[in-house]
Length: 180
Image (spheres, helix red, strand yellow):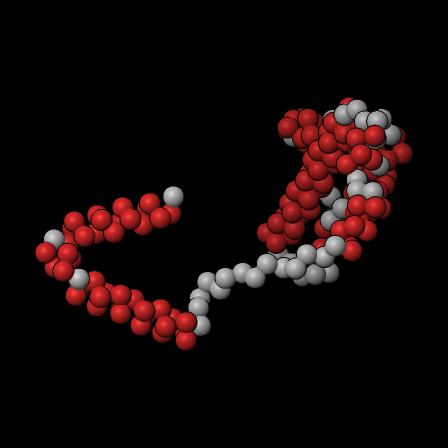
């Protein structure tokens, strides 16, 4: 079929207002697409302008397979945009169904007044001094020396030498009483 015949056939279908047999077959084959495109109205002129056709891909020097891939990606983008539009409509319907709270008194009560804000600004509290998790080297050295001296005293103690477990029990009892 020559180029003149193709354009003539296209012009005839456009002017007659009927869908060509080829398009009817495609619609029958793509039954799944009917569900997706059911609620959407397409402007054929807009769709024709934005579609990737063989003419638009001719100048790029792509192979047939690459052209098919490009066309497929464009189709998937269109389908995805329609699905997202549907989801946005659903979300908007859900938002419309939720009632708007008319009483804002609770919100007003929860907000701080000007007096409360000024009191907080005027009465500044001193920040609490936090204990350092890692002590300085001098402090660590002093603690080590103290622990060594205490350990030496414990080793010299007569009650610890005779029965270490009894001495530990006695020490724990005394420290727990002191804490209470």
